[in-house]
Length: 220
Image 1 (cartoon, rainbow, N blue to C red):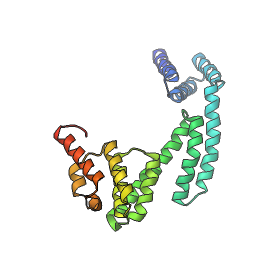
Image 2: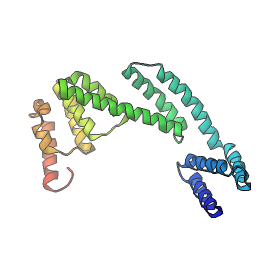
Image 3: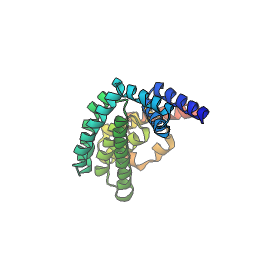
Image 4: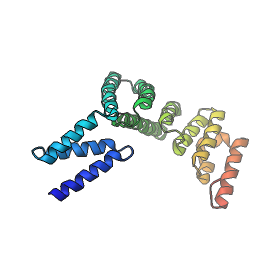
């Protein structure tokens, strides 16, 4: 038991010192202290936890948790999905800047990612089932605020813009999608969503660059 405890404490201490894993180590040490609460080792670990709790890093986490409670309360009061997303994004930027290395910031980022993924799923369903590009486009725009430079989402948005007659936006989106890694040239050439772009010089350059890259076995 002593050898296992020594090993577990060493692992917890290593996590405490590891970049961005402080809270894993803190939780592991707290669990050990509870497990051995009636032993001298348990008392020593509680003393270590008390010392850690006085650390500025821990104070920052507690401050973040208090602020996060306020943020969640504000978000829970919003029922409209778009309004909730906009408010989450608005609150996220200053919150993340202040508390970026805390679990609370990670939780808020997780909420944003979840909303972005949901927006993409709904947009693709709208296109697949109803060809409703007008409703799909703002959802994809919303997702790209959280997942920028995503080649597939950028390409989907370019297609929506093309269908909506927003030719310049569509061409820019197509160029960006390829720049971010979308290189399925055969798909692009056959995609009916891009039919209005076929005669545009920017479109032709994209296809030319992709075909050269394909022929050379690499990226354009």
